[in-house]
Length: 227
Figure: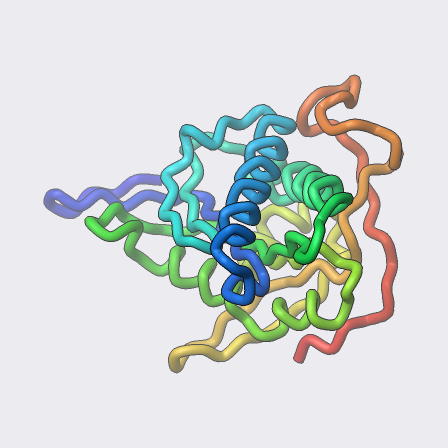
């Protein structure tokens, strides 16, 4: 959906925000290593579902990025298969983690925005960033030292995409969360288990069905306190 108001074009797009947990505690060399590993993990996960991150409109910070995905991208594939592959890529990167493991928070939302001189403007970028910074999402990593990825989707994306059954991660694997920030309330759904390929020995991108056909399961863990 595109509306025009003078010279301003309003678009309805899928947004992804990602952040490295504990980035400021690393020295400069470790920060660069974390940036490189995260870039490789995101690139690999995107390729695994037939996407090219070179075509994403990215607003980059030292410890993460806010990306606006191109029109026509299947949100169910990003909300499910991409996340599963990213979780696997992070686990692989952390096999030789050294002093610091790469632990990441990820949020997804779809909504309206418009391009601006300092990045996208509108409600959608605000929602995805508030969910990314939410204390309940941070606690997912704080409360589980073995976990590499904390993942949240907005309330509207959960209803429109995850609930449909086309997403590789089932709705029962998520828990609703309500976040108050900057005088507003934001609602989302946090993945309370871990995203995992059905066959632990399967390599990303080798599923005979191709992107979008990967089966997945959510590993059950004790309920997290997300209030």
